[in-house]
Image 1 (tube, helix red, strand yellow):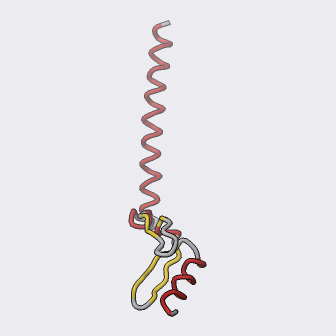
Image 2 (cartoon, rainbow, N blue to C red; image 1 turned 90 degrees about the vertical axis):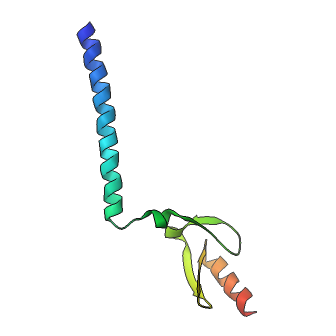
Image 3 (cartoon, rainbow, N blue to C red; image 1 turned 135 degrees about the vertical axis):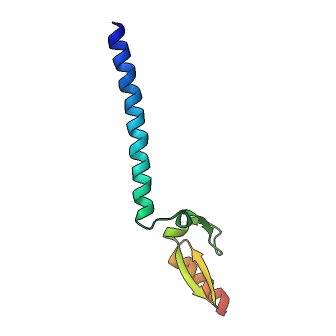
Length: 84
């Protein structure tokens, strides 16, 4: 009976160690593909003040400055505000 409990305990520990190791490999693969922490940084849309991750933001250069928007509609609205 004690052997069975000991084996089950060791299997649980082994499971958690392997799971942690595979998570580490997964994170390394993401870094190797060029996905950096900078792309996960949250940026604020200057029109609607919504925060979006930089990797999915609509990026526009307007008047020599780079702006990040949550959508194309917000980018157009901002351009219209700057010109009008």
